[in-house]
Image (tube, rainbow, N blue to C red; front, side):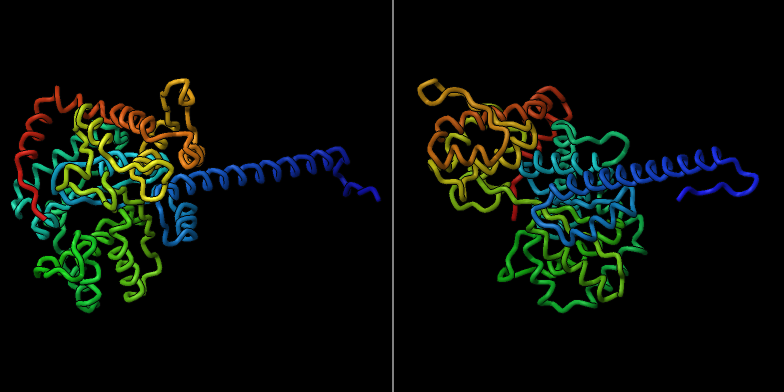
Length: 387
């Protein structure tokens, strides 16, 4: 049945109004779809940083409500920087900032002192901290627009001590000693170690850091998971609804068989960020890389977590007799060739060393040509690393 126009309203006007409303609804729907698409892209990019996320629904809600979530990351200045700390952190931070996050990197100088790093010498710890920042700048951590802040724990805590210490005391008061000792992994310790009183205080302080920095997301390694969970438990204790989201990244293994984690104190375990080309080549040549075996193969993990995210491909040069040159676009494709024997360690290793050297080249050059960086490296190399 045709709709009659009301009195004094021409039928043409009513038809025009109906078309206009329809167009407006379509535009609104299209705009809503675009917003949803952008949110999903941001979510997927941030989520790709973590091996584990607690909780994914909370991360989605956070992105829908907050344009610039605050991500917290931290490190102890405790020795030379290896590629897991240098390259992997740079990849993660650049993903987070490109997804609209602000990243606060906590230079945990007081924590390194509590943990007896550099023999507890705060001046040495500060020198190591400056050296680490120098590396991240050289390797390409995107700091445009102030989206990445480096904050020294000693300076920030002293400036707002009236906020910080009551928070630490409240966390300590609400937790039994065994619960705090279970967090000892965050310091590179075990529950069986004989801990100092300072090392008991450490987890309470690291838990407090999350709230002190107003972090929405805790973006640290899987080895820091226990203290991040402690922060969520503290939210339950104080009836706080907005819990920090835990986004824990993968821990790269050492170069030798059975080394679950790279160690700064073991040169055979690590490729350091300012290692020269010959050193990188030699370390990869000696690395554990059994034919056809993917599980527990550090060389394959470096390709998966460093090379492919950096270059979006992995190039292998080899003779025609061995299959000719090949470019891998995905880790799954690489795994299939490696497990079948079509890709041999003798071809994979030189390709991996070449890719890592290309990533490290700006850092290698910076520490050769910049006088300040050169002096920092000289001093750090002279320090004795203490556990």
